[in-house]
Image (cartoon, rainbow, N blue to C red; front, side):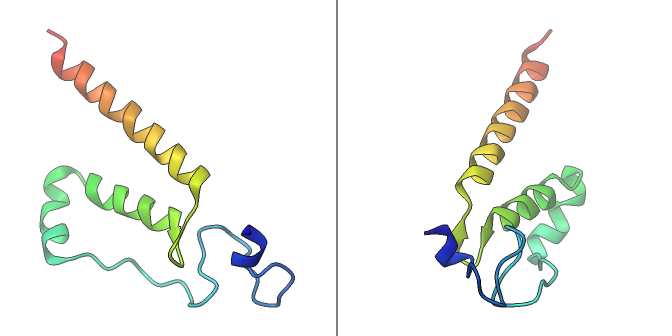
Length: 87
């Protein structure tokens, strides 16, 4: 199934998992809210949004990359909780 979605064997084949087959790469546009709040949160929302855009390409979710992202976010969240709860 992945070969079908990635246009395997075609001139327009997907060479990287985080690149679109249908459109040239463009910059990620942020909403006004994201632009204003991101510097206050040390650009963490922008980084997470960029990660989500890398795993959701052409309306296809890359499961392995999604699982890695969720594991990374869980680990990060656990470290924050441990840091806050430590007295």
